[in-house]
Image (cartoon, rainbow, N blue to C red; front, side, top):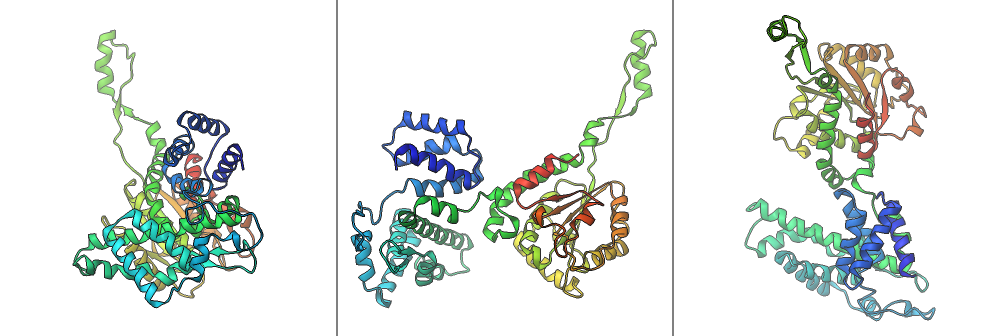
Length: 465
């Protein structure tokens, strides 16, 4: 593959990973590389990143794709020839690794070395151990030449770096509960080692199956394009810094009609006084300043099993919105409504709050199956004062109600009571009105928007009328 072909394939892989790379930006990267040269890999990475990466959430995906197309080494670090169809497709070091004795004693020695590296926090030592771990424990031989694969799961299953945290702390003269900050530091070193193992597995897989294949199936989308329903706990943590600005934009949009009406009622006294300079003719009308206020927000969250991952996102969104509105009241439901406003107190830990919400959901569930009609009816009966002309209503859920009564007149009345009402649905719009989905029925009563990732949430905020 020529350098130009590799550049074009690299840019295409970035686009497939969710990075918006335009043609002009690709040309800018070529000019930067022409000026800086190809002598240093870190300089090459910096040139590409400076010209192609627009937002920080896109950087992890960029780094993964860059490592596939511009790997730091080949095989075990030496050039490997693939001239024949025999076992020469495996490097000498890999051949030795396959025949090496990796019994309990050798595994114990490796874990001991890993414990020392974790305690020292040496990234170079961890990187070398990650390569060794993949070489010794991650290779899965195929039936024929070139069919070998590598598995990070096999490596983690053999090495179990998470079990070494207590041993590392003991070596450092600490116990598990003595220094939480030190434990978090060691946990971060373990996660860094796991990331190095994943990167090494991708690199070796790319040598066998090609970088295009590996980039297509192993590189995760950027955090702003990752579906809420498939997000892991670590992904939700990465989303948290992005949700705050979106919440502020949402609050600004909901209150912008007040911002447009900056002037209050006519200030008659001020107007008359000002007219004295023009012979009593009121050339300029003065108004009293408006008192700045913020509206209220009521959030209804479906936390049933079908949207369990989406519930984690809604939790963080409610946390962020709490600071932007005069008052926020939060309710969760499966088939019974349950107010959880008190869970969103200042300084509360989101992870602990999510666990508490899961427990409250069990208490709020009568039949254990989602029933939107029953939940809306119970909300109207038990909290008649929740919605007022200054309250915005936000519903979060997939609108799948198990073919139960939808209570559409009740929902219409709730929408009428609220100042504005919107529905964010984490399900793709092509699936609306299939099976037990009532998205179209509810969407006829209040605007419903597909909201599967942060990009769509931002688009919903931008499009608010």
